[in-house]
Figure (cartoon, rainbow, N blue to C red):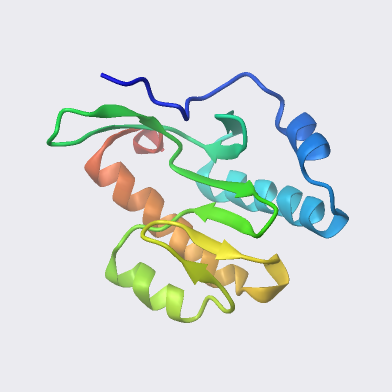
Length: 145
């Protein structure tokens, strides 16, 4: 079975941001997201793979037999947008998403250009709902909270 590419590393989060993020507003947004996600998850920021900053961890196992570990909530300060790995498909998340502001979305990722474009209170609800969902459905560092 293939080894997961996105695993927790020992890379320093601040070193990553300072080396990878080349514009000051996105750098400031990255540090603000760290502050918020750390508070909401009660977990320290860790690097996952080369470019994802994650909080907490959980173990998943699919019906296919594929399994691995992932951060409970996370983000990456990509060039095009801040990629937020925070969404769980629950009714409360759907309602919060409606009030989030300016964003794009794929199946489980929310993309925002800058934090000023979104409602931080709605993001908090989405993150908390994701943490709750993962805690209820997976072996999770967040379960001990």
